Image 1 (cartoon, rainbow, N blue to C red):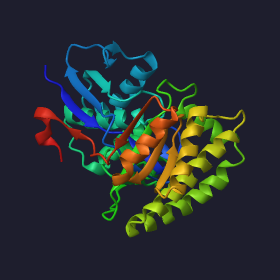
Image 2: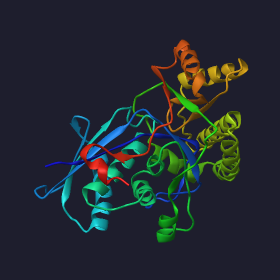
Image 3: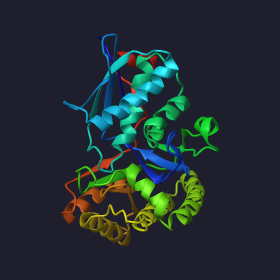
Length: 335
């Protein structure tokens, strides 16, 4: 039986998503803005079967861990409900980048699953609807439906109102030619999941609400900088927003700390690069790995500087990547 296959790429938030106002629907406290990367794709195939008594989920060459398989099956239930089709499915997912290491594997994973599952079950969804669907698996997956710069709207209200109004959409920035240099400091799965860290930060950090307020201004400033092609402005805003988010985590009780000694060495090298006249600005998600925004022409120089520190296991230069899409024989159905 032929399956439906889709691919999607991770995105790195420049204005961060950190905190939900609705856990069930994955409605964020703040709007966010990201850049989809052209590396570390997830490829997912969904095959519907009349014979399966339950969904079967594999991750790479192995059966998926029980908690991940349950999450995928719950996501497929949403698709089945919309399609009016109760048949179970076999899901095979391959992450070409590290899983659970703060490199947005959940974003690429659930964006690919949303596109593949919608195709397999015959749902005719436009990009906005696919973004809303992907959000139900992982909030940041809503942004990986699109390529390049993308904003995820927080939406308004709760319940159905919030669900309908919280989606991602592309942001034009024709004057920029950016790259993100990824310094892979530690590819191991992080000790505390993003979901658990996010909840603890929202519930206990006295710094969280001030960061939420400042993030709204950061987003307005970011749109101005993107429209003007101001790479330095974009970088400065992204760096302050990310470090502010990590400050809220350090203020959680108990503190959540994703920085490692290697992270700090890379961050120090970013400051040195700027002193040398290179426009390079750091951002970090829920993990020790550092991503650095720069002009694409400076990507190799920045990567070489990080390699020289000895702090990173691997360094690569990522150009902006495409949105999620069906692949192979299924691609003709993609809108």
